[in-house]
Image 1: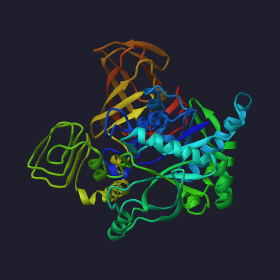
Image 2: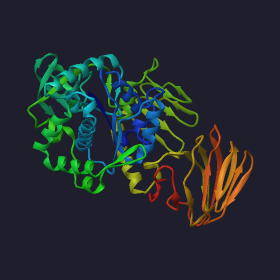
Image 3: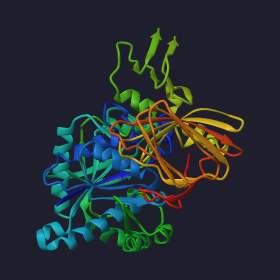
Image 4: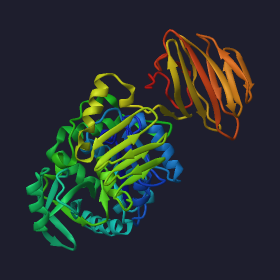
Length: 485
């Protein structure tokens, strides 16, 4: 049995302002109609004998990930929730332990081969243009993993890239090379020599191995990590569609990447060359390179007008963006932020995100439109003691039964019909009508209809922060959580 493991824990800060901590790049449609995580899940589903995927994600992203899988008709074997980031090695260890445990429970219905699944580990935010080439490489990797190899994919370099680590390929057998050496990100001259030699591949961060082999090797080279991950899975419990691991055990787990924790130390590291239009979309420059360009090598998205511009990426989410005389620049507009940067400095965008966090600016982590399991809200306007939001409640969805200590709310229904709970009352509010929720009243909104419910909410009071929510009941298991944004 082959089990895809999708790693969806990244924050994608170098693609700010489009990618944000609570809505990162893997959940965005960066190159087409589908998001990066949707494309990744569908890509790996093309491999023969693939089971349902295991997704490992930040618990803050859980509803978004689940909704995106439902959007492509995929039901995950499990969505494992990380209470905090610990890098890739612990994330994969969780998946490996869980996969073996699940296979063991179903042992009576499967073969002995299936009791030790082969894991195909893929970051959720990579782009691969040629799916057929990826499937061929994956088939080679799976064959090597069946023989006990710990296999990584090495991307055939298109240029002397200094932003990636490299793998030096050794002797070859059945299309698979031994790993002779892992090397850090080089300077330009060294990268040029690597590419000219033909012996080096980009380190992609994608892996294939048996779950038991990974655990066995990790037990040798990182025993504290595997011990903590085993305890975290042993103490796990189900919560709706998710698996919540034990937080205390997880807090004791060392943080490390698969490369540092294992691949650079094992004697069984193998590499399969991959030439399939791969990109990790790690920066705006990388996205420009991976996108379709016009005759002036520009990439545009949204309502954009260019005059005398070359080699630039201009993205508009919300309004008309005009650019004149730009060369090798990035311009990205969203509802609440604009980024302008030279293409050769886009790796430094994360410095801006750090400064935003230091200044406690919400733009570091949230978009103006914030997604919730019931729908979304958009902050339209705000001022001293008031705030205006547009709520969109999905058909059949219901907000938590809640109360606010410091604010009152006026609701105007502009599309659909709302079923409102206010203290001991329950009543319908149709389109073009309104209601008032006094400060301290226990209340709830439900959309009983078959179309999205749109409400204009006017809040007024001494404090309007999202953490002024006391939840009494919640269909999504969020009682006791402090809302973020």
